[in-house]
Amino acid sequence: MAGNILGTTVYYDADCDLSKLEGKKITVLGYGSQGHAHALNLKEGGFDVTVGLRKGSKSWSATEEAGFTVKRNCRCCKRC
Image 1 (cartoon, rainbow, N blue to C red):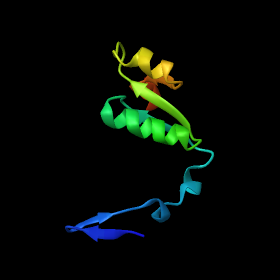
Image 2: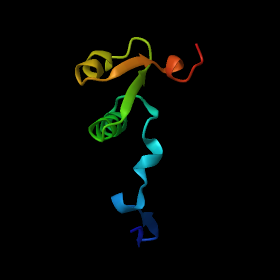
Image 3: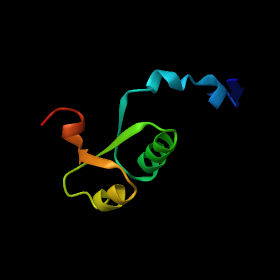
Image 4: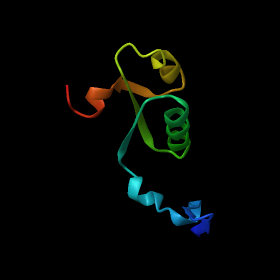
């Protein structure tokens, strides 16, 4: 369960209720070091993940090659 390490609360798998995410579409904005890791973890966990990138992003093709649906950021946020 959650613990305290050097004044910071650390959460573990047992602390999460992933059923709250079941059946929902999840969008990760960006595919840099953090976005890449989060998107892959969610995808491997069986979730429906879309990656939002800016128009002309150099990461677009790599993201598609990794098997993700890719959309422009503004489309993911319903702002276009």
